[in-house]
Image 1 (cartoon, helix red, strand yellow):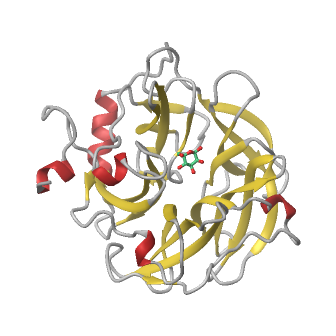
Image 2 (tube, rainbow, N blue to C red; image 1 turned 60 degrees about the horizontal axis):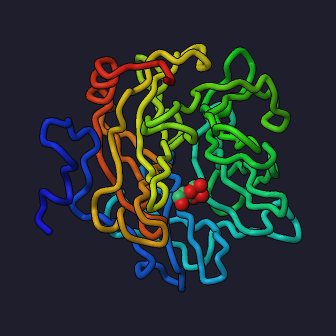
Length: 329
Ligand code: BMA
């Protein structure tokens, strides 16, 4: 495989907005200090005190149950210092909602609380729901338990209050019908209400028909909250996970300003196409570079490895304006 085939996807006229890092996959199960089957879908954050990049990876062992493990690096690509034991392990006794593991964390730095908020999927006996934990050091955690009941996942907190309320994006799955992206509000991070659909799944043959979900936490830009979201296309050979964009109003995030008509990133490299669950790219974390424009986007590849792609916020915004379609049919 040559360099180009790692980096470009499809017809050359498609603009390559997310550029795969040449060192992908940047983290694999064999890099782990203890036995794991797969490492994927990591939360990401630049640590306040040290500027180091921390990933909180989902790690699955051979029981099939996932836990979270942190990895820290200066450049966010190489020389990872990985915790030698699980950072956050499902605790069946104290947190029964974590019976079958904890998955897919998203991390937001919350200046108001002076702590990081980690939202993750708790796989309970009643199905997967959204849990919240706060931390200042990724060593000890203040657990809020399951804040959104099953079936619900793909959640991230906005880093600030809107009119005195916290806001969370999440993806409940109704017993029948399509799975849309929702937004909800809370005065205290524990009690959530004012639920409403934020981005509905599209219909028919659209790339984001029937089931969509938030990818990384919302990215604050001068023009609004930039949202990366995944669309799941069900094909004869399984599900295909791809990524598109939306922009929400800065002051009133229930207002969707733009939504991309096309997906911008999909499974292409061998490790994205082949793994425990093939044809999945699943971004869950980002950090912004010193220039305030360059994003490092972290994603799970085929539910087995961790990869990174870079993008320019300005490029994403200008492309989104030109490829906007708010409709669903
Ligand atoms: C979703 C989540 C993700 C996973 C994806 C593809 O429902 O469970 O953790 O990466 O499916 O298998």
